[in-house]
Amino acid sequence: MEINNINETEKNFDEDAKSVKDITSLEEVRVKYLGKKGFIADIMSKFREVPQELKKEFGQKVNALKSKIENSIEEIKLNLAKKQIEFEIKNTRMFDYSLPVDTNTGSLNPRTIIQKQVVDIFKNMGFVVEDGNEIETEYNNFESVNVPKNHPARDLQDTFWLSNGELLKTQTSAAQNRILRTYGPVCKVIFPGRVFRNEALDARHENTFFQLEGVVVGENVTVANLIYFEKAMLKALFKKDIEVRLRPGFFPFTEPSYEMDAKCPFCSGKGCHTCGNSGWLELCPCGMIHPNVLKMGGIDPEKYNGFAFGLGFDRLVMIRTNLDDIRYLNSNNLKVMSQFKTRM
Ligand code: DAH
Image (cartoon, rainbow, N blue to C red; front, side, top):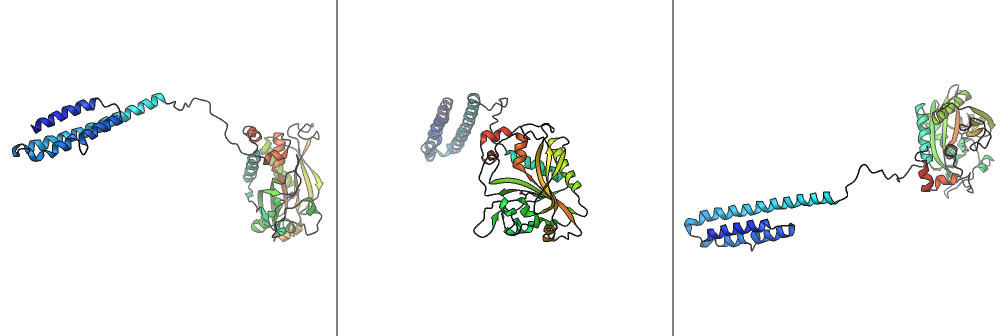
Protein backbone atom coordinates (compact mmCIF):
# COMPACT_ATOMS: atom_id res chain seq x y z
CA MET A 1 0.00 0.00 0.00
CA GLU A 2 2.84 2.34 0.81
CA ILE A 3 4.45 1.47 -2.53
CA ASN A 4 1.23 2.47 -4.25
CA ASN A 5 1.43 5.70 -2.34
CA ILE A 6 4.84 6.35 -3.88
CA ASN A 7 3.56 5.72 -7.39
CA GLU A 8 0.59 7.96 -6.73
CA THR A 9 2.87 10.71 -5.48
CA GLU A 10 5.01 10.43 -8.58
CA LYS A 11 1.99 10.81 -10.84
CA ASN A 12 0.78 13.80 -8.88
CA PHE A 13 4.20 15.40 -9.08
CA ASP A 14 4.30 14.91 -12.86
CA GLU A 15 0.96 16.67 -13.11
CA ASP A 16 2.00 19.51 -10.81
CA ALA A 17 5.31 19.94 -12.66
CA LYS A 18 3.47 20.41 -15.92
CA SER A 19 1.42 23.25 -14.53
CA VAL A 20 4.40 25.25 -13.23
CA LYS A 21 4.46 28.66 -14.94
CA ASP A 22 6.92 30.69 -12.96
CA ILE A 23 9.45 30.56 -10.18
CA THR A 24 6.78 31.14 -7.50
CA SER A 25 4.64 28.18 -8.50
CA LEU A 26 7.79 26.07 -8.83
CA GLU A 27 8.69 26.91 -5.25
CA GLU A 28 5.20 25.91 -4.14
CA VAL A 29 5.62 22.56 -5.86
CA ARG A 30 9.05 22.13 -4.29
CA VAL A 31 7.69 22.75 -0.80
CA LYS A 32 4.73 20.50 -1.47
CA TYR A 33 6.97 17.53 -2.29
CA LEU A 34 10.36 18.17 -0.73
CA GLY A 35 9.49 20.46 2.17
CA LYS A 36 9.72 19.41 5.81
CA LYS A 37 6.03 18.59 5.81
CA GLY A 38 5.93 17.56 2.15
CA PHE A 39 4.93 14.29 0.56
CA ILE A 40 8.39 12.77 0.55
CA ALA A 41 8.89 13.50 4.26
CA ASP A 42 5.46 12.06 4.91
CA ILE A 43 6.20 8.86 3.02
CA MET A 44 9.56 8.52 4.80
CA SER A 45 7.85 8.80 8.16
CA LYS A 46 5.89 5.69 7.33
CA PHE A 47 9.08 3.68 6.74
CA ARG A 48 8.76 2.03 10.14
CA GLU A 49 5.36 0.61 9.29
CA VAL A 50 6.55 -1.03 6.07
CA PRO A 51 6.84 -4.81 6.38
CA GLN A 52 10.41 -5.98 6.69
CA GLU A 53 10.49 -7.77 3.30
CA LEU A 54 9.35 -4.64 1.45
CA LYS A 55 11.62 -2.16 3.24
CA LYS A 56 14.43 -2.45 0.69
CA GLU A 57 12.19 -1.91 -2.33
CA PHE A 58 10.36 0.84 -0.51
CA GLY A 59 13.58 2.65 0.44
CA GLN A 60 14.93 2.46 -3.10
CA LYS A 61 11.70 3.76 -4.60
CA VAL A 62 11.42 6.68 -2.24
CA ASN A 63 15.02 7.68 -2.85
CA ALA A 64 14.57 7.37 -6.60
CA LEU A 65 11.45 9.51 -6.48
CA LYS A 66 13.15 12.09 -4.31
CA SER A 67 16.06 12.37 -6.76
CA LYS A 68 13.72 12.55 -9.70
CA ILE A 69 11.75 15.39 -8.09
CA GLU A 70 14.94 17.28 -7.19
CA ASN A 71 16.33 16.90 -10.69
CA SER A 72 13.20 17.95 -12.45
CA ILE A 73 12.80 20.98 -10.20
CA GLU A 74 16.35 22.05 -11.15
CA GLU A 75 15.57 21.47 -14.80
CA ILE A 76 12.37 23.51 -14.63
CA LYS A 77 14.26 26.28 -12.87
CA LEU A 78 16.85 26.40 -15.67
CA ASN A 79 14.17 26.47 -18.32
CA LEU A 80 12.39 29.31 -16.57
CA ALA A 81 15.64 31.32 -16.37
CA LYS A 82 16.29 30.71 -20.05
CA LYS A 83 12.79 31.84 -20.95
CA GLN A 84 13.23 34.96 -18.80
CA ILE A 85 16.45 35.89 -20.61
CA GLU A 86 14.86 35.30 -23.99
CA PHE A 87 11.94 37.47 -22.91
CA GLU A 88 14.28 40.28 -21.83
CA ILE A 89 16.29 40.13 -25.01
CA LYS A 90 13.10 40.36 -27.03
CA ASN A 91 11.61 43.18 -25.00
CA THR A 92 14.53 45.35 -23.98
CA ARG A 93 15.88 48.02 -26.30
CA MET A 94 19.35 46.73 -26.81
CA PHE A 95 22.31 49.05 -27.46
CA ASP A 96 22.41 49.82 -31.12
CA TYR A 97 26.01 50.20 -32.28
CA SER A 98 24.94 51.79 -35.53
CA LEU A 99 23.38 54.81 -33.80
CA PRO A 100 25.37 58.07 -34.06
CA VAL A 101 27.59 58.59 -31.00
CA ASP A 102 26.63 61.28 -28.52
CA THR A 103 29.64 63.54 -28.91
CA ASN A 104 28.80 65.76 -26.01
CA THR A 105 31.83 64.64 -24.03
CA GLY A 106 34.42 66.77 -22.26
CA SER A 107 37.29 68.40 -24.10
CA LEU A 108 40.76 69.50 -23.21
CA ASN A 109 41.42 73.16 -22.66
CA PRO A 110 42.94 74.44 -25.92
CA ARG A 111 45.87 75.68 -23.87
CA THR A 112 46.55 72.11 -22.72
CA ILE A 113 46.41 70.93 -26.32
CA ILE A 114 48.84 73.55 -27.55
CA GLN A 115 51.15 73.00 -24.58
CA LYS A 116 51.36 69.33 -25.43
CA GLN A 117 52.09 70.12 -29.07
CA VAL A 118 54.81 72.65 -28.29
CA VAL A 119 56.39 70.47 -25.61
CA ASP A 120 56.45 67.51 -28.01
CA ILE A 121 58.13 69.64 -30.68
CA PHE A 122 60.91 70.70 -28.33
CA LYS A 123 61.25 67.16 -26.99
CA ASN A 124 61.81 65.97 -30.54
CA MET A 125 64.60 68.52 -30.83
CA GLY A 126 66.33 66.96 -27.84
CA PHE A 127 65.15 69.26 -25.07
CA VAL A 128 64.67 67.93 -21.55
CA VAL A 129 61.24 68.81 -20.11
CA GLU A 130 61.15 70.14 -16.56
CA ASP A 131 58.64 72.06 -14.52
CA GLY A 132 58.79 74.50 -11.68
CA ASN A 133 57.12 75.11 -8.34
CA GLU A 134 54.10 77.35 -8.15
CA ILE A 135 55.17 78.69 -4.78
CA GLU A 136 58.67 80.08 -5.05
CA THR A 137 61.20 81.95 -3.02
CA GLU A 138 61.87 85.59 -3.71
CA TYR A 139 65.42 84.56 -4.55
CA ASN A 140 64.41 82.14 -7.32
CA ASN A 141 61.72 84.34 -8.81
CA PHE A 142 63.69 87.59 -8.77
CA GLU A 143 67.21 87.74 -7.39
CA SER A 144 68.61 84.67 -9.15
CA VAL A 145 67.44 86.06 -12.49
CA ASN A 146 69.17 89.35 -11.90
CA VAL A 147 66.25 91.30 -10.48
CA PRO A 148 67.54 92.53 -7.12
CA LYS A 149 65.34 94.24 -4.53
CA ASN A 150 64.21 97.70 -5.62
CA HIS A 151 64.91 96.89 -9.27
CA PRO A 152 62.23 98.67 -11.33
CA ALA A 153 61.57 95.42 -13.27
CA ARG A 154 59.81 94.10 -10.16
CA ASP A 155 57.07 96.63 -10.74
CA LEU A 156 56.31 95.05 -14.09
CA GLN A 157 55.23 91.87 -12.41
CA ASP A 158 52.74 92.63 -9.66
CA THR A 159 53.25 89.84 -7.23
CA PHE A 160 51.03 87.74 -4.99
CA TRP A 161 53.09 87.60 -1.81
CA LEU A 162 52.51 84.91 0.80
CA SER A 163 52.60 85.66 4.50
CA ASN A 164 55.83 83.65 4.91
CA GLY A 165 57.70 85.93 2.48
CA GLU A 166 57.44 83.49 -0.43
CA LEU A 167 55.35 84.19 -3.50
CA LEU A 168 53.30 82.70 -6.32
CA LYS A 169 55.81 82.60 -9.16
CA THR A 170 55.29 85.47 -11.56
CA GLN A 171 57.31 83.88 -14.36
CA THR A 172 58.63 80.49 -15.38
CA SER A 173 62.07 82.13 -15.26
CA ALA A 174 61.83 81.39 -11.53
CA ALA A 175 63.01 77.86 -12.30
CA GLN A 176 66.08 78.99 -14.27
CA ASN A 177 68.46 78.95 -11.35
CA ARG A 178 67.50 75.45 -10.21
CA ILE A 179 67.65 74.17 -13.77
CA LEU A 180 71.05 75.70 -14.49
CA ARG A 181 72.36 74.16 -11.27
CA THR A 182 70.84 70.78 -12.11
CA TYR A 183 71.61 70.50 -15.82
CA GLY A 184 74.28 73.10 -16.63
CA PRO A 185 76.69 74.01 -18.04
CA VAL A 186 75.70 72.18 -21.24
CA CYS A 187 71.96 71.76 -21.50
CA LYS A 188 68.77 72.20 -23.51
CA VAL A 189 65.76 72.40 -21.20
CA ILE A 190 62.18 73.63 -21.47
CA PHE A 191 59.91 74.16 -18.50
CA PRO A 192 56.21 74.95 -18.95
CA GLY A 193 54.26 76.23 -15.99
CA ARG A 194 51.45 78.26 -14.51
CA VAL A 195 52.31 81.79 -13.41
CA PHE A 196 50.47 84.38 -11.37
CA ARG A 197 50.31 88.16 -11.43
CA ASN A 198 48.30 90.42 -9.23
CA GLU A 199 46.71 92.24 -12.14
CA ALA A 200 43.31 93.68 -12.95
CA LEU A 201 41.58 91.39 -15.43
CA ASP A 202 40.54 92.39 -18.92
CA ALA A 203 40.36 90.80 -22.35
CA ARG A 204 44.18 90.74 -22.60
CA HIS A 205 45.18 90.26 -18.95
CA GLU A 206 44.68 87.34 -16.61
CA ASN A 207 46.05 86.90 -13.10
CA THR A 208 46.79 83.25 -13.85
CA PHE A 209 48.30 82.19 -17.15
CA PHE A 210 50.66 79.68 -18.68
CA GLN A 211 54.13 80.10 -20.07
CA LEU A 212 56.91 77.96 -21.41
CA GLU A 213 60.50 78.88 -20.81
CA GLY A 214 63.51 77.44 -22.55
CA VAL A 215 67.23 77.62 -21.89
CA VAL A 216 70.11 76.38 -23.95
CA VAL A 217 73.61 76.58 -22.49
CA GLY A 218 76.90 75.46 -23.95
CA GLU A 219 80.07 76.74 -25.50
CA ASN A 220 79.64 79.24 -28.33
CA VAL A 221 75.85 79.36 -28.29
CA THR A 222 74.63 82.18 -30.55
CA VAL A 223 71.51 84.14 -31.40
CA ALA A 224 71.46 82.19 -34.66
CA ASN A 225 70.86 79.02 -32.62
CA LEU A 226 67.98 80.74 -30.85
CA ILE A 227 66.42 81.74 -34.17
CA TYR A 228 66.91 78.22 -35.52
CA PHE A 229 65.02 76.56 -32.66
CA GLU A 230 62.17 79.07 -32.70
CA LYS A 231 61.73 78.74 -36.45
CA ALA A 232 61.82 74.96 -36.21
CA MET A 233 59.17 75.10 -33.51
CA LEU A 234 56.95 77.41 -35.59
CA LYS A 235 57.34 75.25 -38.65
CA ALA A 236 56.28 72.14 -36.73
CA LEU A 237 53.36 73.98 -35.12
CA PHE A 238 51.96 75.76 -38.16
CA LYS A 239 53.16 73.21 -40.74
CA LYS A 240 54.94 75.79 -42.87
CA ASP A 241 58.03 77.98 -42.86
CA ILE A 242 57.47 81.15 -40.88
CA GLU A 243 59.74 84.13 -40.98
CA VAL A 244 60.79 85.75 -37.71
CA ARG A 245 62.36 89.08 -36.81
CA LEU A 246 64.12 90.38 -33.74
CA ARG A 247 63.50 93.73 -32.13
CA PRO A 248 65.52 95.07 -29.24
CA GLY A 249 63.92 94.38 -25.87
CA PHE A 250 64.80 94.62 -22.23
CA PHE A 251 64.86 91.88 -19.64
CA PRO A 252 67.15 91.88 -16.63
CA PHE A 253 68.04 88.22 -17.14
CA THR A 254 69.22 88.51 -20.74
CA GLU A 255 71.83 90.66 -22.44
CA PRO A 256 71.22 91.47 -25.20
CA SER A 257 67.45 91.05 -24.99
CA TYR A 258 65.02 90.75 -27.86
CA GLU A 259 61.38 90.55 -28.74
CA MET A 260 60.96 87.92 -31.41
CA ASP A 261 58.05 88.41 -33.80
CA ALA A 262 56.70 85.85 -36.22
CA LYS A 263 55.32 86.79 -39.59
CA CYS A 264 51.57 86.33 -39.24
CA PRO A 265 50.88 82.75 -40.38
CA PHE A 266 47.32 83.62 -41.35
CA CYS A 267 47.91 86.49 -43.78
CA SER A 268 51.62 85.82 -44.46
CA GLY A 269 52.41 89.37 -43.47
CA LYS A 270 49.75 91.16 -45.50
CA GLY A 271 47.83 92.28 -42.44
CA CYS A 272 44.70 90.73 -40.96
CA HIS A 273 42.49 90.69 -37.88
CA THR A 274 44.78 88.28 -36.00
CA CYS A 275 47.91 90.42 -36.37
CA GLY A 276 46.07 93.73 -35.99
CA ASN A 277 47.01 94.52 -39.60
CA SER A 278 50.69 94.76 -38.73
CA GLY A 279 51.65 91.54 -40.52
CA TRP A 280 53.64 90.43 -37.43
CA LEU A 281 52.79 88.66 -34.19
CA GLU A 282 54.75 89.19 -31.02
CA LEU A 283 55.90 85.68 -30.31
CA CYS A 284 58.56 85.34 -27.69
CA PRO A 285 60.68 87.50 -25.48
CA CYS A 286 64.22 86.19 -25.45
CA GLY A 287 67.90 86.93 -25.30
CA MET A 288 71.37 85.71 -24.39
CA ILE A 289 71.47 84.69 -20.73
CA HIS A 290 73.01 87.44 -18.60
CA PRO A 291 76.43 86.49 -17.16
CA ASN A 292 75.12 87.22 -13.64
CA VAL A 293 72.38 84.63 -14.11
CA LEU A 294 74.87 82.03 -15.31
CA LYS A 295 77.17 82.81 -12.38
CA MET A 296 74.32 82.45 -9.86
CA GLY A 297 73.45 79.16 -11.57
CA GLY A 298 76.98 77.90 -10.89
CA ILE A 299 78.15 78.27 -14.49
CA ASP A 300 81.31 80.07 -15.56
CA PRO A 301 80.22 82.85 -17.96
CA GLU A 302 83.78 83.12 -19.28
CA LYS A 303 83.55 79.61 -20.64
CA TYR A 304 79.87 79.07 -21.33
CA ASN A 305 77.00 81.11 -22.64
CA GLY A 306 73.42 80.46 -23.69
CA PHE A 307 70.03 81.80 -24.61
CA ALA A 308 66.68 81.87 -22.88
CA PHE A 309 63.19 82.50 -24.18
CA GLY A 310 59.64 82.70 -22.94
CA LEU A 311 56.44 81.69 -24.73
CA GLY A 312 52.94 82.54 -23.59
CA PHE A 313 50.56 79.64 -24.21
CA ASP A 314 47.45 81.75 -23.69
CA ARG A 315 48.58 84.14 -26.38
CA LEU A 316 49.47 81.32 -28.70
CA VAL A 317 45.99 79.84 -28.28
CA MET A 318 44.41 83.22 -28.92
CA ILE A 319 46.43 83.55 -32.11
CA ARG A 320 45.62 80.02 -33.26
CA THR A 321 41.90 80.23 -32.55
CA ASN A 322 41.11 83.92 -32.95
CA LEU A 323 39.80 83.93 -29.39
CA ASP A 324 39.50 87.56 -28.42
CA ASP A 325 39.29 87.32 -24.63
CA ILE A 326 41.98 85.60 -22.57
CA ARG A 327 39.56 85.15 -19.66
CA TYR A 328 37.71 82.39 -21.49
CA LEU A 329 40.73 80.15 -21.05
CA ASN A 330 40.30 80.00 -17.27
CA SER A 331 36.54 80.10 -17.30
CA ASN A 332 35.72 76.41 -17.81
CA ASN A 333 32.95 77.66 -20.04
CA LEU A 334 31.88 74.49 -21.83
CA LYS A 335 30.34 76.37 -24.71
CA VAL A 336 33.74 77.86 -25.45
CA MET A 337 35.88 74.85 -24.58
CA SER A 338 33.89 72.37 -26.63
CA GLN A 339 34.45 74.42 -29.78
CA PHE A 340 38.13 73.54 -29.75
CA LYS A 341 37.75 69.78 -29.89
CA THR A 342 38.24 69.73 -33.61
CA ARG A 343 39.78 73.08 -34.28
CA MET A 344 43.23 72.59 -32.82
N1 DAH B 1 60.00 85.95 -17.77
C1 DAH B 1 59.56 86.88 -18.77
C2 DAH B 1 58.13 87.31 -18.45
O1 DAH B 1 57.42 86.57 -17.84
C3 DAH B 1 59.59 86.28 -20.13
C4 DAH B 1 61.00 86.05 -20.63
C5 DAH B 1 61.66 87.04 -21.29
C6 DAH B 1 61.62 84.85 -20.42
C7 DAH B 1 62.92 86.87 -21.77
C8 DAH B 1 62.92 84.67 -20.90
C9 DAH B 1 63.54 85.69 -21.58
O2 DAH B 1 63.59 83.53 -20.72
O3 DAH B 1 64.81 85.50 -22.04
O4 DAH B 1 57.74 88.37 -18.84
